Image (cartoon, rainbow, N blue to C red; front, side):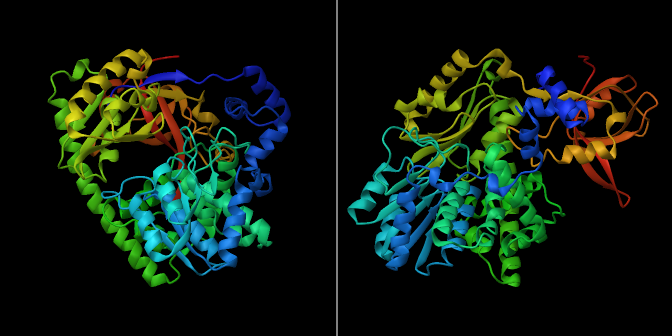
Length: 567
């Protein structure tokens, strides 16, 4: 892992001082609020006390009226409705949410999730044929569909209507769906643009509930699904997403649906769950269904109504995730060997790897591992259905989508955004793609993007970290993009003599500043960095978390980096 470049996040100090005068909380928290563009008392109150009545009206979304009218007609005339979702967490939670909600109004329901290997991402032609043969006359596509022009046109020729609930950026003309619900449509005035796919499905359910005078609790019980989608799809934790995630986490911790309860039991996660627990605990188990099997297994679990069957289904996903990890570790190790054996590696700005034996469900994870290890934009390709298919991941400062757009003439298809994407191309085009992608990276990647950055929110003293400090910091959660868990810096730190090295280059720290309080922390992969500063004062960059120590809860540090640098 390359060493970090520490950067102090800027803040409007005048604004921070004004917030301190108004809010009377510690200045460091006013600095954090200023970094989040929170400028006054009312904005701070909304941030610290999210309210469901601050959610935007669903009918502000373009085509929402048309979507509700079409769903109403399908319910009224007992049409067969097919719910379609992508095979990842966002897609499976979307299908589970809409099925859970509509089943109270309508019984002629079915759902379909594509096979990752055979059909790939998006609305497949196979799903349209399935809709036709099973008699569906309306398909609600969630977390996909805004680019599915051909599949939706085919469905229309069969007399099958589509409602699209997507959160990806449209390209050119919209598909010929009855309704295209997507806040990123250029003509959509919906105030918040960053909903997850499941979030948009929730807005459709919310609109239908308003039309049918459905009790509020029938909507609020869906929020655990929305929170999991927001966490795992890594959408911004701002505005409406933060409200939905806040209340969804409350439901997940207090009254989770049986499927989530079973996953929590089988995964060994402890209450209360945080966004981190969802991303690294529940998310991989749900994703494992589609990576190495049938994504419908995840939907069945999320819709489970019997405790023992839910536990059994959750156990199956835990086992499948273990298999996924084994394949992941083997693929990642092989990919690293390929990179490290390349004599051109030190000079290269990008990584593109191709091995037809790699599992299609794992290559996205492998691409992420390459970025983590080598800090270069990475594309990992394998063979599927007579073509090369790949997952791409980027580094901050390099727009992956734009770079791949310049290679589009080599692709059969591609899609994604600035940080992650998927591609398909003929195998004979792989060498030309490797060369062109490297040329684009050399041309467009700024020098600062070549070193991983650690954004420091504020410098604090250990003496500042009191129980009151911790209680206030917790009110900044839930954390995510746009509202990241702040990384603090402490300077002039010394070892108490109780720090110890752990296996795999990890270290458990026991440190203090001067004669101040002792704090403990863990630094994963930082054993060598600690050894390099041992015996001298050093700086720490860290998050704070609550740890159980001999039966007592203490505030501890999750150490991000150790440095002799001063700022």
